[in-house]
Length: 110
Length: 328
Image 1 (cartoon, each protein chain N blue to C red):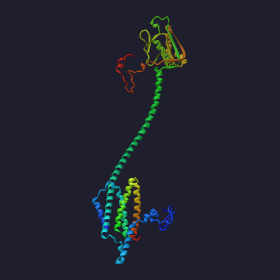
Image 2 (cartoon, rainbow over the protein chains, first blue to last red):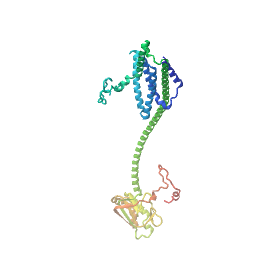
Image 3 (cartoon, chains in turn red, green):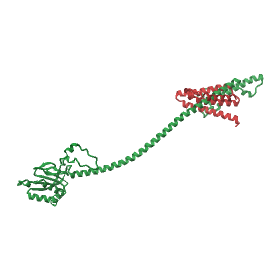
Image 4 (cartoon, rainbow over the protein chains, first blue to last red):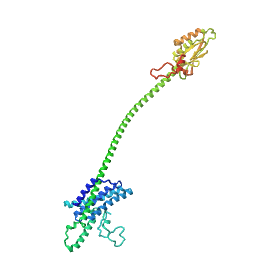
């Protein structure tokens, strides 16, 4: 409940403020969002599994975002940014899919 | 790697580890195929570990208080502060998603605009290419037409040149050679009076007779008889092409020599010339010749001073020519 409120507050804040992302960080925002999405779905699944933990969630969220952006940054420096971000998206996408499948099993018992 | 899945507990028989005796079992993350690993560990193991730790702690404290329920496992260890931290993180997530969304849609406008510009430019260029191609086709057709015209003109030019050549031969403006007859006219040695001598009219009769008999080119004492040649007397000598000549007069005519000699006396001029020769007593002699060579007429005859082709562009007539143009 409080998490849903937080999400609402965050969306409203983002819409109201519309902060300008620094140009240097702009390419890493989408991949960071996907990583954060993975962390959030993982947390949701853990919550439904009954093993949710705030500390683990905060740490996994931050580390997911930082590592995903970092991988893409390193890839950009090495000249393989596009390929590396594709790899990150694939891995995160698979995780999100299986997490959502687990959540679905919980919600619909199917 | 994905071909040989095996339980992690079993002692691995891997390529590198087979020689070492009694190696410790490899962890799952090493032995599992990558995709399987990703799918299996999609839930962060930390949650499970934290839950186990909590359960262990609770089991320990549960022996003291005995208040633990299965539902309380889901309660975060951090309590209210932990919930707030999670909410803050979720809020950050919301901000990130929103910002990314806003940013993407903003950039979409820009790239849309540039794409529209590009498409319109492409369309414009395509229209230009179409127009240019239509021009190309038109020009090619015109070119083909002009080439046909050029071919026709070439043929015409050749025909005209051939005709010009024939006319030049006829009118005496190119040197010619060929068989013909030679007529040598000798003065009467006894002639005293000017009336008894060979006159310009007599030579004109002779030349006319040769023309009538079929001569194609005639010359008198090396002067070619052209379309503009006059044979006349001004004072004592006879002048042909304004150049004085003296006896004996040699008249060359190119043509069929046998026919020229035969037809000479069939013409009125020939008969008249023969009569005058008998009356005045001068002699003349016709003889065939296989190879006669006649020069061209004077080049100044080719310049037209007053006559103009009505279809040709006006000729540049200089004032000098007009002033001196009275002379024939």
